[in-house]
Image (cartoon, rainbow, N blue to C red; front, top):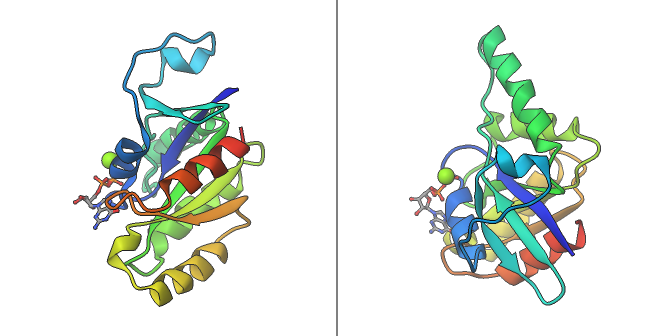
Length: 167
Ligand code: GDP
Ligand code: MG
């Protein structure tokens, strides 16, 4: 049981830190799936019965030009190639325009499950985390939502299990 996951979110929300913390092994793998020829594999998360292959995050920016919009739809089509998407929003900053923009784009991708990930929880109090879980949940109808810290490692096993369940 193996599948592909990628993380999206504004710059600096902690995607790279989260991926590095999740990933146990960095190996180049060959797969019959066409996406592996085009997407960089960041690593593999090993779980008892399954493997989660983390692929590089495509940039998702607010489009300001027609060209930007076209690039954006390219990015969106690559998002449909993975089995599950992790949408990252930090616990320590208010939900803003950039987060809403990405959430709206993700809501348009019907076939790929989206798990919301509230990152950097080591920087927030329990109350702030609870409030952020509510605020992020209100952005879209996510398949799941998990608070984590890539820095402290808290809840990374829970996140891995939630993502694997959606493969
Ligand atoms: P990305 O742009 O979404 O890939 O974000 P990065 O992973 O590069 O992180 C952006 C900044 O936030 C860096 O300075 C990280 O050290 C910091 N950061 C990322 N994750 C955490 C976290 O869980 N806790 C804390 N305290 N800082 C974090
Ligand atoms: Mg990064």
